[in-house]
Length: 186
Image 1 (cartoon, one colour):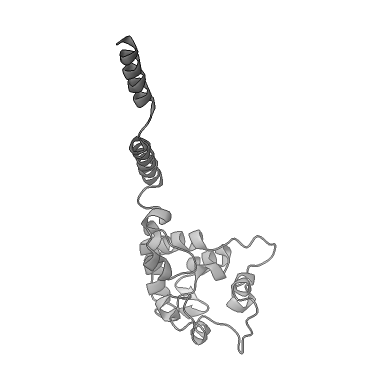
Image 2 (cartoon, rainbow, N blue to C red):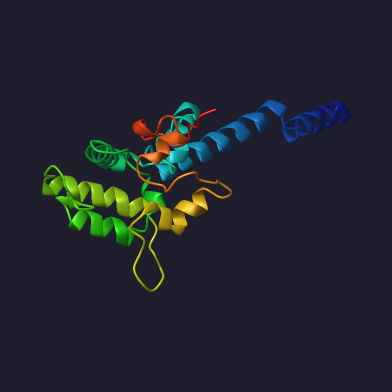
């Protein structure tokens, strides 16, 4: 009888020490869930990693993804500059060139432009300075697309038939008027 009690207690101990695969799976699930929630909170819902769907990534209008807080400023830039010519991606000219162009308004390459109110200029500047690159060289920064090393860097091995201007972009980029420079003519 004593042996029987010992064998029963041994079986109970063995059962207690054996872990169910369901318990382990549940623990792994809960740990993964906690890590996922922690990352979502840390990144926030405005993070491009968290908030951009695959369709949004394919429909980017500019060369670089634009954060939500600068989207309105980009739209103002595209609307105002697109009144006379296609709005250029800010990446193709240095920041110093863009600063001069905005400071010289309402004169723009010796053409009188429609008055742009100061808040619009500030919004456009916030967008432009976020996506343009500094010149970083001595001397005058380029004031023509054809003279910009940034333009040439984005267009390696492209042979142009004419001097590049703001409106010649449409010869290759069929949706440039929509500020979509990722689309090309076939």
